[in-house]
Image (tube, rainbow, N blue to C red; front, side):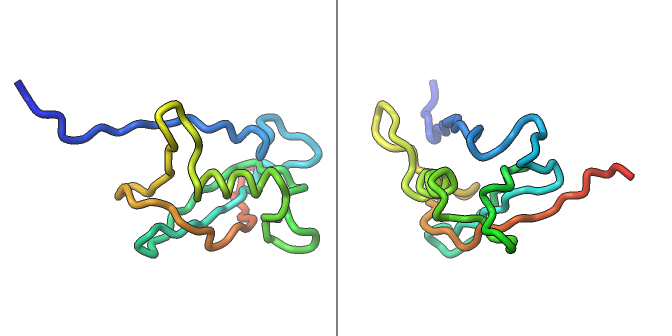
Length: 115
């Protein structure tokens, strides 16, 4: 006999609208969208989305356009959670502290390693 002390659940989230799995003219495999969120204790949570669609960047800058409906929907999902059958699944960090705000959303370059 035993006592269940902890249960963890992982919810798959479709981010296909943010990225191209095949490189098209509007994405670059070396560009990632870097989202930095803060948890309720002020610690940062970093999420990188490789091959993010270039149209989601503010023209002439490295900033992601958080006013873009697709980018905004992802940010809202990370902060407000996603509705599931039993209520709402709220994203958290590895310490299980809720994500509460967006700190920054920028382009980062990751070298492909090809010469």
